[in-house]
Amino acid sequence: MLFQSSVVVLSYPAENTLTHEYLITITTSTRFNAGLTSEATVKLQVLGQWANSKAFSLRHKDYKRKILRAGRTDIFVIHST
Image 1: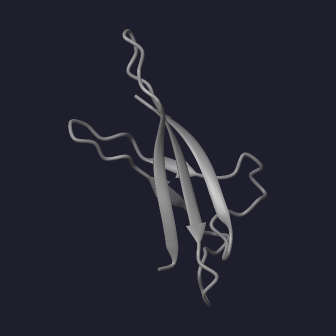
Image 2: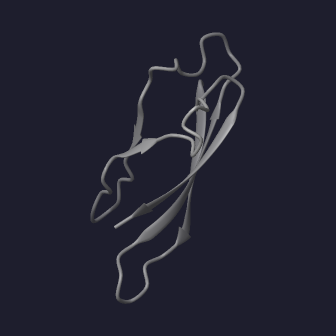
Image 3: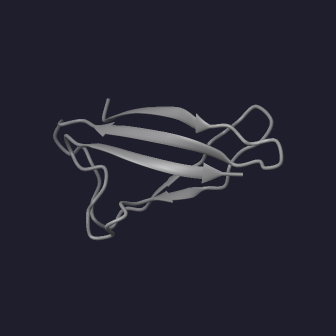
């Protein structure tokens, strides 16, 4: 396995809003060729029983830092309506 991931719901929508907050954790293997090149774009979509989120581009808040590199764990927070 090159990636191991988990999704945790951080907050459910208030009565008058539909915004969910999710914590996404992705751990990349240390195997040879695990991880991404610097040119790669990673998109994530949360699929639900009644609806799906839009596609999110995953990136670090410091745009110079590479994500999903071999042997690292990356954590993202997304907000979806």
